[in-house]
Length: 227
Image (cartoon, rainbow, N blue to C red; front, side, top):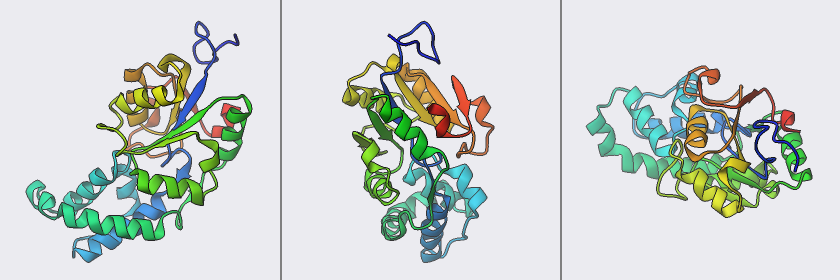
């Protein structure tokens, strides 16, 4: 069996799990438009792209709550308007999903190389599944994946290991032989807890923190390096 480049004492990687926002697609533009449209609807202060970059990664509910708190609401006040904000956010986001985003350089090359090696691939994101599937379709990436799971697919989201463990079950591969590719500490922490090797990209969204501080086995500047 070929040597595993990340862990030479283990068999080669048999499958890969790939994150979406910040790893495959630069979606800050979509978040910027949809989230600020919601805040304008509610008469709340808008947020900048740099603000959003620090807020994304833990799901849409967390993003909305963070933006409301950033605009000066208390936790109780934010909770009081969250249901309306979420309903508006769904409508705004689905209306523009993918229109203000772009696939990062090297993504198609990296995914193509993994598939050429016969590895089954799954996309696992904290983004709601109803947003993730259309985005992958719009960007021409859906065909690479045998499974797609969102932040509402399981009881918990990354950094909890449950989504990775469930995705490994779907892929039919042990966690130790299933590579996680992401862009943030959420991916690194979830992979470590699940027992998956993990590669992180250096260009994604990591809540404003240096990516080299997140758990990882390797850092890459492009998914093309996975070839």
